[in-house]
Length: 108
Image (cartoon, rainbow, N blue to C red):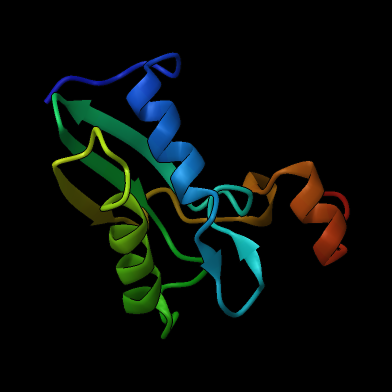
């Protein structure tokens, strides 16, 4: 699989779609939370490498289901690999400034 750069319109469409998927516990989208580590594509096949806020997060299957359902609506995407990783571990420093503000996270 080839790595797609950020200016790839399909990668942009995938990132935009993923920004509508919320972490149900925090009520903030997974892109703003910094849970999406990588988006790669090879033609119509997309690989999303993502993480969760903790290894024991019981909402992982729900988040993956929501990701798959959302990406199924992206016209250019034919198939999806969602790869969960905990390397590197997620930290609040990965969040967007807006997410940090909403959650009251300072100094991360």
